[in-house]
Length: 388
Image (cartoon, rainbow, N blue to C red; front, side):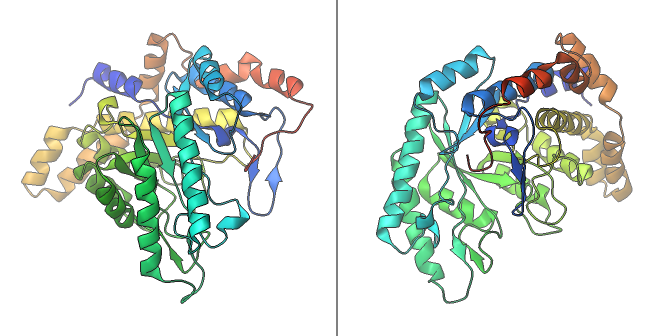
């Protein structure tokens, strides 16, 4: 069993990437709710993300979305991030908000639209080069609403060809992170609906193509930790997007709906050492905070991941393996439950004090006056929102 010092070291080493769009105004399909102090541009989004890292010590990267985060000088944006103690993480493409993509992007039946979508990804690769990022993250809204609307097979052929063009443009140290989602906005058939489809395309593309797993992108009752295990076994889990869901892709704070599921997932990750930086699994908070304050919600999410990871690290692996080998069903389950039921908050508070951080990051942020400062400074001008 790991010592408390070993647990602390492992938790400190886990860097959780935040998403630039998590700090902007967001909402449901019915309403976007504005909040005071919300960023007006990508520079201010990164400044807010840096606050999360300042108080947790565990959020060193910020994921960007193109074109939402387009700037004239990405080298300057990357330098701005470094000055604030963070760096640019994955670059996310967007081929789902242009009228040309109504019938799809990389799988569209129109060659001109497919070429436009490929060109957008080449632009994203240029952003990778300018920011020093290594990961191009692709999620597609492509799919069909009605049977017979298009050929299922032809769409996969077009998609494979488009992805190959993008893959061929990568630098040697770049990766494609290919995300899947089983429905929405397409309802009859989604072109990349599951991990098997994503993995199949990645295996065809090459070693630098990996799968993105988002906890909200599965049907109810899906055993996500099984998928984690299989992708790690294949060496193709490139990124894990943390959030929570009750019904669909709710994008709530990670651990809010089912903290035990989060623990189970992290147990599988820990059991294969995929929590270590050398695994290159990109752990990211893909969340939208519609009614809760943005920065405290992201801080809370980082803390939730840290707590679940600490519990997973406290599983007595030797006792668990023995119980499994002996066919001791209750003993094996008990080994997991003992770790899950451990209150790790004092351990993590001690870890933060050793790092020179406040043991209560949310309280420290609320005392800092940062929210009052940005609410005053950003009162004038259009605030960034979902899609901007």
